[in-house]
Length: 80
Image (cartoon, rainbow, N blue to C red):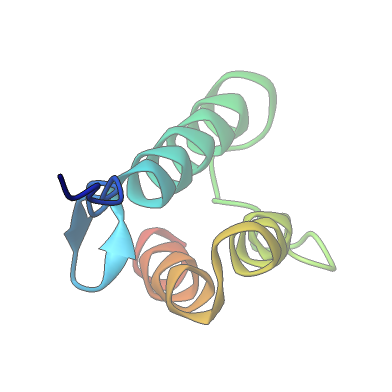
């Protein structure tokens, strides 16, 4: 009788980034844009220094790795 070791399923990714990281990035950036539209002037934080999108980039890079941080950077630059 042979005993096989359990194999963990591979996490689902898109563009080499975990789908959870993609979803979290999108939710946080969407929430930031809603906050900007509702409580601020709707200019996507152009006059705020440092820009608030740097926080999601740092969190994604620290939690999920460099690829997720780079993804958050690209998406943040596109929506800013």
